[in-house]
Image 1 (spheres, rainbow, N blue to C red):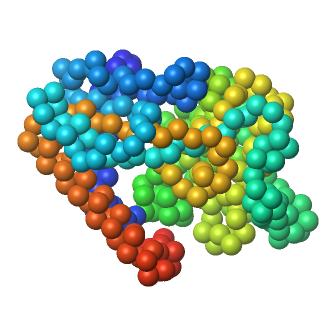
Image 2: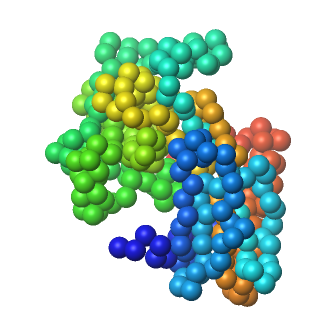
Image 3: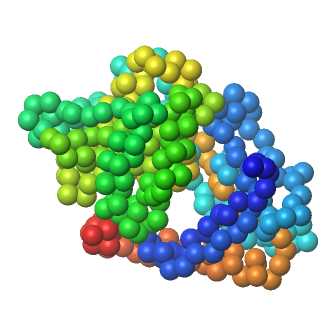
Length: 313
């Protein structure tokens, strides 16, 4: 398969967490791996880029970007649009787990340890979780993780759950044979309540798919499993070459809480200068602006979290 061939990239048009419709672009994808950004001074790769002959354009994913450039720019070179701008949070895995925990405030460190202890008490005095790294273990991990993913709001509302299908499982097994993936499941008794899917690429562990059983929300199963995986990862019994944990694109309280480094980043679309592409990007930018305004309004009235919980049911 040609890595430079256009890939289907879906741009979601949504209001809050509700997806209204989707449009699929065929784009050549240029990735900006975390390891390269931290090893070398970031520099733009868009200035000398030209539009490919095939497809709709280019997607620069994880591009270092100090601030959001604003609305789509439409010119002879093409349509330039940044649909998402975010702090790319990551964890530096050098040092010990104790050193890492010392980076939290005393209050945050106490809260984190309290949540882990409380889940242990809720589980009868012992936390049961399982790490899956071998190819022959991936079918079990995948079955349990899909059981959780199917009922999460990430899958029901955002369409970002753990992918279904035998091809995804086969890819997990191939990655596991090369030591390139971890899977983790947290249990309450015999019931799986949280999962993490963590591919590994060039010394970086990627926070790719995650989810927890909504009935266990108040017991913080996602936070507990993240803590346990990081504790294992810092010990480096298996993967001493892993240097960073990359929370990848997008923001969230979980990523801000656990991360100890960040890079302002964005995903940039360079599209062919057509009327259709101009309309699609302008309408997407308009919806994003409306969503932010509505979120700000809900925050002002102090009902944002209640509304979010209602729509996630």
